[in-house]
Length: 208
Image 1 (tube, rainbow, N blue to C red):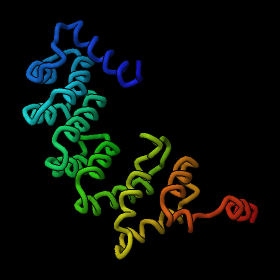
Image 2 (tube, helix red, strand yellow; image 1 turned 30 degrees about the vertical axis):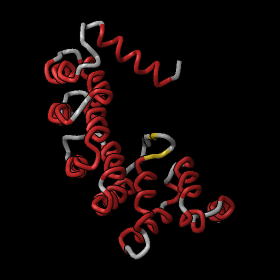
Image 3 (cartoon, rainbow, N blue to C red; image 1 turned 90 degrees about the vertical axis):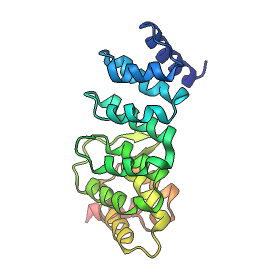
Image 4 (cartoon, rainbow, N blue to C red; image 1 turned 45 degrees about the vertical axis):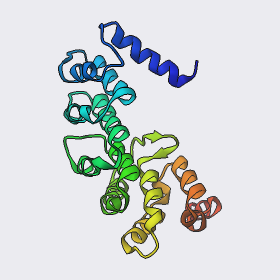
């Protein structure tokens, strides 16, 4: 059994134990809105990806402010999978909303669905990441939030001074990036492949 199939089977089994029909949108909406079991709500927000329509979007928007981070994250992801570009305003708002804590999820949705509208907020978010402590860096499919933002912005780098300044700032703080981030950026973006400090150059600088 594939990992994804195993994951789905676990979700289905979790809900079936409560007597919930995992394939019925209206039933899953009621679980999200009314269930007291946090795990059941989380499962329902994910399973709506398989049967959900625009009818479930309002309940998922409410779930973005549920008192459990996993539910908040899966709700926004599910909205993006169902509604796509039509909820671009929501993704942009989530990035600046202090009540929605997972900015990485918002960044991913903006990158996928907001086109050029995302340039300014994503640029601002990347600058904030660089200013932060960076004590714990999360990854999704080998991308951190910062590398996700930079790979997106690279498409508009030419002729955009704000993005060019940001890329320069990344070079200035190159040693603050995790090795995994450095490897990803030099592999995918020619700017960093051509301009990032080489390992031997960094060693020389440290010795000096």
